[in-house]
Image (tube, rainbow, N blue to C red):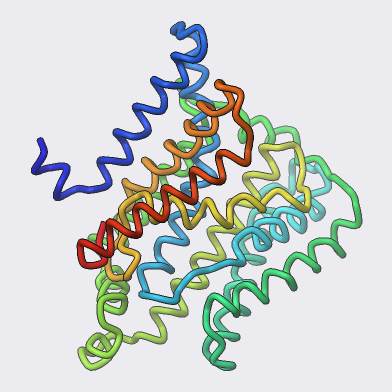
Length: 315
C-alpha cells in the first residue's frame, strides 16, 4: 500500500479529500442525507474546477513559465456573449455553445499570438490579455444578467441517476484528456516538450504547434466552462470566473502533476478539486471564513511545491 502511494502521489489528494469529508461531517449532524447532499454538491462544484484544471494542467505540462492566467476572463467573456446571444431562447442552445467555444478559441489564438509573435512570457501575456477579455465582457454585459434558456438551466442544475449532469460532462472531458495523454501521439509530444523542449525539437516534435494547440485548447475549455457555469448559476456575471485563477493552478499542483513540466495527472485533478471544495465546506462548518481558506490553500500549494522540489520536480 505504501509503495503504491509512493508511486502514485496523487492518491494523497484522495486521502486528504476523504479526511476532509469526514471532518466536515463531524461538524454537522453526520446523517446519511447530509452526507449525500455534501457529496452531490462536491461533485457539482468540483466539475467546473476539473474542466478548467485540465486545461491548465496541459499548459503547466509544457514546462516552467507556462501558465494561463486568462482563464477567469475567458470564462466570463464566453458565458456573457453566449447567454446574450441566446437571449433565453431554447432553440439557440447549440449555437450559443458554439459561440462560447468560438470565444475561447479566439482568446487562445490571441494569447498564443502574444507569446509567439511578440515573444512575451506566457504568464505576462495571459495576464495582460485577461484585462482585455474582461473589458470586452464588461462592455458586452453592460450590467445586465441574462438568464439561460430554461431547458439548459435544468440540465446544468440537474442530475442523472443521482449524479450531477455537470459532473458527467466533466468526466467525459477527463476521459478525453486521459486518452490524449496516454494513447495519442499529441500527448507524447506534449510530455516530450515539457521534459526537454530542445531535445523534443531535435527529435522531430513540432514544439511550436504543440504549444499552440495546448494554449488554444486551454482557452476553449475555459470558454466551455464559462458557458456551463453561467447556465448553472442562472446567468453570467462579471465575477463568475474570479476564483478559478487560483483554483485552476491549485488543483494541478495538489493533484500531482509535475510543476517542472513533462508529467500530467488527470485523476489527480479530480482528487484535488474535490478536496478544495470539501475544505471550504469543512471550514464553513467550523465557522471559519474565506481568509482562512485562502491561507490554507497557499500553504498547501507551497508545501507541495517544496516536496516536489525535493523529489526532482515531480509530485
